[in-house]
Image (cartoon, rainbow, N blue to C red; front, side, top):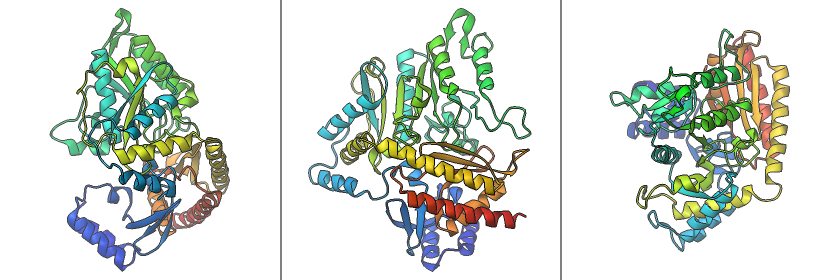
Length: 461
């Protein structure tokens, strides 16, 4: 996109004068390569927020079904978190990558909730990409193997160390001429809505079984099953695919990957950065498959709105390193750890997950009612408050409604509803409300979607 094209979009947008002035100042001083005009035709300028609502610089209210990409899981400007941050800031705000009471408490809590049996340890980072890089580094160091296997459509970060693991192909060209980490192999991600023989195909669980069978022979660079040779350090996956479109695979998915890892001596790393910490109605999304990973990567919601990430895993793996093997100036930031302790306490409090699942069920039922009214809704994924909607032009052929999805997104912005659009075919809605969202807010979202789908139907006949 050229600067002039961005200016034209701003000029023709529905926003008011103040917003347009600030948006032009934004593109004058920031790289156009940021995510703002990649996610929206033109993004709103958000000035403040409260709970499940956002407000732009002109005071317009928006239903927040982005939650900062699952960061603001306990709502925007959570008063209790704000108070904790203020109180902590009066004692200590930064202490390099060293231990402090809040960090020590949080590491203990993360070990307790990991769901991994035996002794566990934690490594802290700042961002999700940090956590992924730490996990694959320790996996390679521990096993002495080079390759990492991941699923088509997974998103694991956009640093040079993680970009090779993120199969959002649209980003790869921007790494030319220096290619990102390429000691990576890919396997299919199964989803129940699309099958391999569809006109607009996807993958089913059998596709993963076929990949599993290829590892038993000698025709891959990853293994020679006959001679028990393995060149793979770890399988790294999102239990549910988030940035790709909020896709929920069959429960057998992680079970098969655990089988592969156990058979060949690979570690299994789950990326719970966006779908963990209660989003799926359980602490971790992997728990729905009743397997046990070796390492868990977490971030986003962990810091209560502040940057914080962590790798949780088996002590024998994370203790393989000697002191000084990993370091980061802002890792385990004091304020973020203080907020993180509150987040974990809240998620583990009595009745919290029950309420998440109750709200998720209510939302899912409302969306299923919309599906009966609007043929553009082809499929709804839902688990807890992890919700994806696939839009199609024809339910029988499942032809993706990509252009219509853009129209729906832009019309929702006008109607005061913000969400992320994604999908393998650019036709998915990713709805990410705070975990403590009120039922009346979910009702408002359903009302907006009902109006928008009606208008979309009329517009595209």
